[in-house]
Image (cartoon, one colour):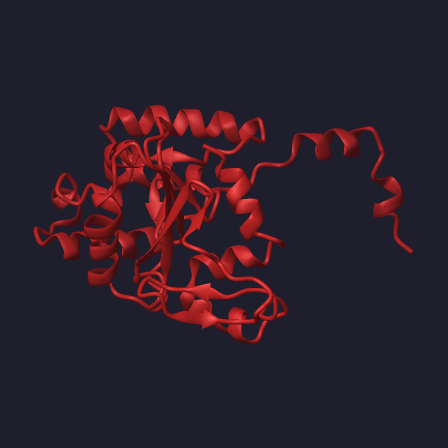
Length: 243
């Protein structure tokens, strides 16, 4: 499925990524430098930003697009679901800051109730083979938290080891699939994590998990091996000398 072709037509410049994913940052649409080149539409077909030079259709060739309202990270966060009728290829979800690989976004403007509904009621209802393209590459940190809250989960252990290898090789860990996320993402596993949180209500489980994740210690940054080698060889000396 030529998703890259369709996305390239949309993302005329990198700044548009946020416009597609977050209505909550609509100032980027209305007042930003790219406001004059596109029209951004929402789940109900309403227009959030308009310039006249570009209109985003709900279909690109054979690729269909559905805008999903998923408040939680921001009050008006949206995701985009793309598929092609009668295609053997899996559909794609561009999930922004709602669903991340192994995690979910912070509750900046929204509530735990909204995030739970977005994750389970909206995104969780999509086909399980859907590929998840999230807005951030923070898989290793997310899975370290997952291993803390569910230390006996073998799928988490394997996924974390894989993500670390990818990170060491400077390779992406995105996309995942919805089916995989239900196996290791703690925010989609609220029932197994009742014991860890001490809560039974699904929303309260998610609320507690999100608070724990917010307090989770950031891993120490590993030095870039190429930078260490350049330092050892003295290649950075001209830049480190005092003026």
